[in-house]
Image (cartoon, rainbow, N blue to C red; front, side, top):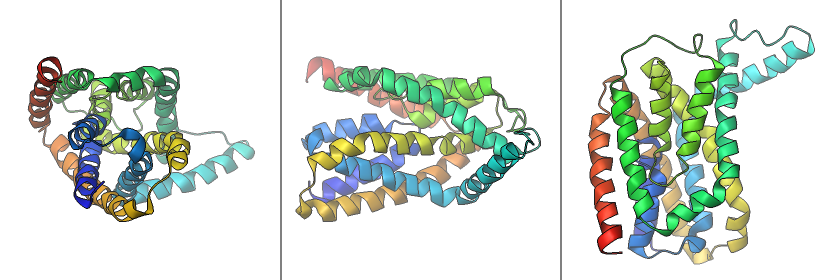
Length: 278
C-alpha cells in the first residue's frame, strides 16, 4: 500500500465515518478500486478506527470528561444508597442512554456478524445500502424542530436509536446517518441529536476495533508499511474532525438533502456497475 492509497483511505474513513455517507461502503469500494486485499490491511483498518475516535475525543472532550467523572459519582451514590437519580443528574442520564443505545447494537453485531460479512462479496448490497441511507436522511430532514433534550429522552428512544445503529453495520448504510434518523424520529432536539450520535459512536467504533484487533494483530504488518499506516491514521483523525464540525452545522441548518442526492447517485452507479460490469 502506497502513501497515496493510505492517505486516500484515511481521508475517506474520517469524512465518511461522521458524514452520513457510509464509511464501510466507501472503503470497500476504494479497496476494490485499488486492488487491496482486505486481509492485508486489517491492522490498518483498526488504526483508522482509532484515528476517527481521536477526532470525537477532541470535539467532545468536555462531555466525555463529565461522563467519566459522573461514572465515579454514580458508583458512590449507588454504594451509599442514594440511587441513580437520573432526572436530577442529566450527565448521568446521558451516560445511561449511551449504554442503553449500545446494547441492541452489540447484540445485532454479534448475532448477524457472518451475514454482514457475506454482504461484502458483491458491490450490489453496498449500492442498496447507500440508497437506504438516502431514504433515512430524507425522512430525518422532514422532521420538525423540537426542544426535547436529555431530560425528556427515555429508554425507548435510546433502544430505537441503538437498533438502527445496529442495522448500519450493513455495508452502505451510514452509521451516523441512521442514528441521526433514529434520533430525529424520536423527536429529539437537533443539536442534542448530533451530540448523542457522535457520543454513541465511541463504544460502537471502539467495539468494532477491539473485535477486529486479534485478527489484525495475527495478520501482522510489514514494517515498510508503517509510514503509510501512520499517515492514513493522522489523515483519518484530521478529516474526522472536519466532518464532525461540518455535520453539527449542516444538521442545525437542515442541509441533509445534499447527502441524500449524493448517496442515491452513488448507489445507482454502484448497482449498475455490479449488474453490468463486475
